[in-house]
Amino acid sequence: MGVQISDILPKKEIEIKDLSGKTIAVDAFLWLHQFLSIIRQSDGVPLKDSKGRITSHLSGLFYRSAKLLENNIKLVWVFDGEKPDLKTMTIEQRKELREKAYKKWQQALSLGNLEEAKKAAQMTSQLTGEMVEESKKLLSYMGISVVQAPSEGEAQCAYLCQKGLVYSVASQDSDSLLFNSPKLIRNLSITGRRKLPRQDVYIEIKPEIIELKNLLKELGLSREQLIIIGILVGSDYNSGIKGYGPKRSLELVKKEKTLERVLKKIKWDYETPAENIYEFYLNPPVKDVDIDFKSLDPDKILKFLVDEHDFSQDRIEKVIKTLTEARQKSLQSWLK
Image (cartoon, rainbow, N blue to C red; front, side, top):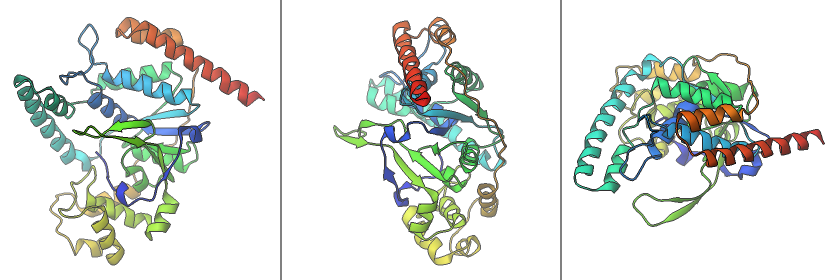
């Protein structure tokens, strides 16, 4: 999902501790989709409670957010609003991919190939309205601010960063930069080692920060030209131009300068005009909001996760204790 141009972006590794005391905006749908995809059993089935309701999203939301809160990082979860018409084709394509992946999943299970089954299953995840409301409820119990965007969540995240209401946007793709976010943090929750797919090899992963002002200067681009690169590579609104990855797109845009001239050098096979996508990135629907942080509510967290969704009481209580101690420590530090 989203624009994948990180290969050409200048970035700097940071430590989680460097973000202590900072407020970060996250694209809620992107994170929830990650949880639904990754948090599964060995056969690819997502986590469920005793009533058969999926809980993978709640598990990921709770433990990832808790870890960041423990490190004195404030979070603002921004939820998507109305999908833009530009995204209709992409939504249909994703639906088709889910259906194909589901068939592969079932076939792999029938053959007893659990590795292939889980891999296919990860592409079948779908975020429902009920899951969204459950997520908002749990976030409020954790004292985390929730923002409802009028349209795209990352556009709203970028707007919050522009206004100085948050320090940065956290995401794995680069859309927020195209939406004019001054800062982007990648790998916010991915620390330590990560296993490479199908290999017995582990790599060290640390958070990275990308600053829009620096990247435009280093690449010799304007923000408008960065948007054109995103359109060439592929976005949520088009699949990209065949043969154009980040590096080749960068070369073309630096040579031709404008969207009008770039379009004369490529074949545009989409019903949606490139100009419409370009304009949407320049002026997306966003709104002014108040960032509201509430108090942690242990009783409601326990009732929701343990009583309603069968989470381990011991594990949830340990996390709540850690969060409570972390908040007290943070408050004491602030009062000194």
